[in-house]
Image 1: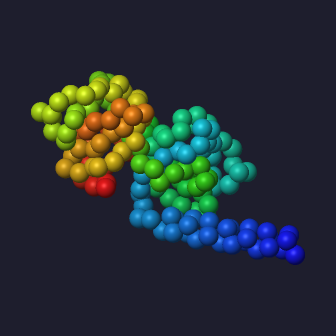
Image 2 (image 1 turned 180 degrees about the vertical axis):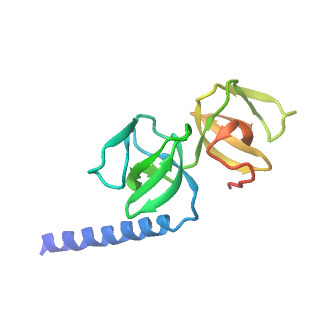
Length: 162
């Protein structure tokens, strides 16, 4: 009897996870996500039988989801490389990467005249929040400030985040 209860609970969890997966798959494409795992393989097609083209070892790296197929997501990385990843390797957590050749300034408020708090070097990844008006709050392991959206890859210029 006990094993049956565990089996039913397992089926219920699968149903909930499947429902969440289906809801996530219905998002308007493209959308941004981030790599959730410390090691994530990008494949040439939407199945584990396809060869891996890249191994990402950078959790929180932002990616743009451009297509979906069952539990697979076709993603584009900040360098423009596209391939397929399991949805379970991705998170809805919004992150961005500093682009360009120069460090970006992180300000106390969403204004270039606001107090300068930090500088983030090109290639630094941080978490996003409070985006709007061309600025995002960018948090790099507890060091946070507002950065102009044009300096980041992982957010659209007109996008608003709570």
